[in-house]
Length: 287
Length: 287
Figure 1: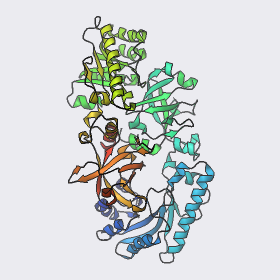
Figure 2: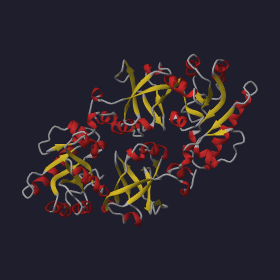
Figure 3: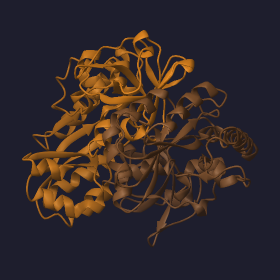
Figure 4: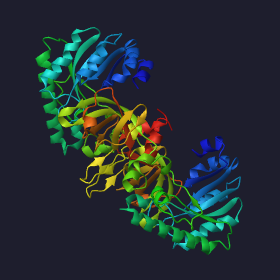
């Protein structure tokens, strides 16, 4: 994907995924064309680079502040300093610290999101202060969409990188990161069949279009997308509690709870607000 | 997809999804080239066709035998007969009855799968006998992979259409439809980072490669794929209970339970047996 952005004229790109050392040839190609930054959370990644890099590359150290997906704990300064050490050699420049507080997706309410954000900002700024006398110009970067949408205080943060708030989606609506009218992605699907006896309808819209990402309803059931009217080329506000109860490869079944949904017939179009717009954007790009 | 098969030389295709009446132009294009069968579970679908069809098309009536995704209940002979009625007009030929017993995916054990299959075969054969004197040559068709893999008696069934048993996957292994060495699809992924303290490793392999389909482990946790060694271009039998505990867009985290998995380092390759090979095949076709 970085190649596509570079070809489209972007000259300063950070690949916000820990370095896959099998991609060193591609890193070299990109670094010869643009200002490239990569992410490191293991000494092995950067040591592999240090012997084979042909052009300057900046690196951020990925910090794990509680999400436990990738990154180094901030207290592990021994590991951090082993990695920073490589900035003294060859083509590598230490750019700073980067985190993704994806644990905000599991937060219950804004106060918990604020608490995660404030704690992350504090830890990042402590790291920055610790190393900036030796490495002036280093920055700290964070980027989960719930924090970036809701928090106000970014005074300790130099850069944000939220991706999902380009579109938002049903999950962000549920978290409280956005309002319905801020959502900018929906999948328009034809109604194929209606089953009045079970208050359900079949759409051509399945896991290959919407992904199997779900949010959990209050009763424990899984919700694969919110179904709303699609009129004159625009999707409308929800008319009721019409949501996808199941998805298989190309079949989507929705529960027709509202009067509007009960009146649908074969051939009508509806819009589905996806649970995760990133996955739907990826799925639909090649169709 | 039917266009691709037709272009590749397939001359007899059944689109096993209830007719999307917005695709009548495409149905006409296909029916002009090949012997095409479609699926009907609503009179509106076939009435829309009957006025606009330019070439002969065969149709099956989709029957719902307990999965409740699509189809007509077999007892609803009034609806069935309204649909069959269209075979007396123009280009439409009634071909028979078709079902998909996807409820076998929720079955606990082979006996329950056999029971679902036998009941489906009985219902289909009753429908066939009821209508075959007036419509000689009609057939009945079923097609879920668990039944087609495990059941022995298909004497009442004229056609099977299982798709998943081309590859099998982790879900079929769990159901008991296949053995490990019958699985024919895996996704080879690089190990990007290892986190010994939490017995986990990061692979470049996420929801955009494997889908968010999961099976539920005995303890209620979600399992997004089984991780096995990949040696000399071949994937191996599982070395332990190494599975993906979480997936996000491009990140996969696996629990490194076995000695083999604990010894992995950045740059190694592993193979992931996907939960649902159909979704992975679709996701990987354009990468």
